[in-house]
Image (cartoon, rainbow, N blue to C red; front, side, top):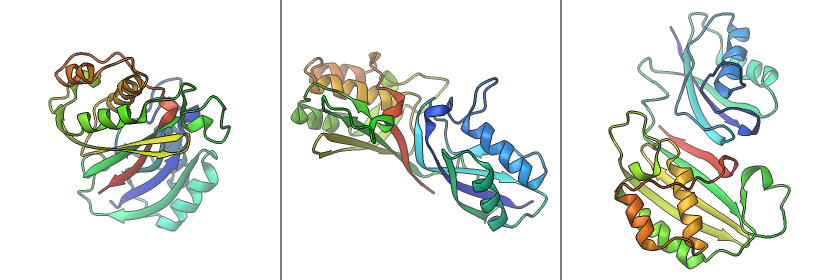
Length: 239
């Protein structure tokens, strides 16, 4: 059976994450229903990762198999016709049979946006965490340097049976006026890891945490600070 790979983007505001759950809208559920309407066959839709409720994606990878052999262009056009306006599919192609969106990913890039101003930006508001009080950017840079490299991030995660909590993380900060963008790149991420890293970094930049506190989290102490989901975007998936 042909193995179809999809690349898509979505605004996560109206969804309870990627993974199908009963009684709530999810990206996987909406996408699966649309695929099955096009090819008239039940499919198993595999995604590259879970996302929390409210998290967005500029680049998300999924795959499914079908015995119908529908042309990729027809799938692409059909999906963009059927899907709601907050989900868009921009690539459909046939990939080798062994390709699996969950296990074939080499690394992912997450972007977190902080809007550091008392004045609301209505264009960025759905995609950022607004913090009115001016942050200490030097402390933020210091915190990012501290968490980068090969570290155990179990203190920043909700562990669900994961054995590999030792992750090589690349982190960087970009400041453009009142917009602070923090990028995280790794082969894999733990649940809530990025949002809790951002929560701790922001509190460090507010002067509410010390470098020693961050080190304690990296040594396994539970981090209780979780940044809002709406500021987080899955920016890039590398295969």
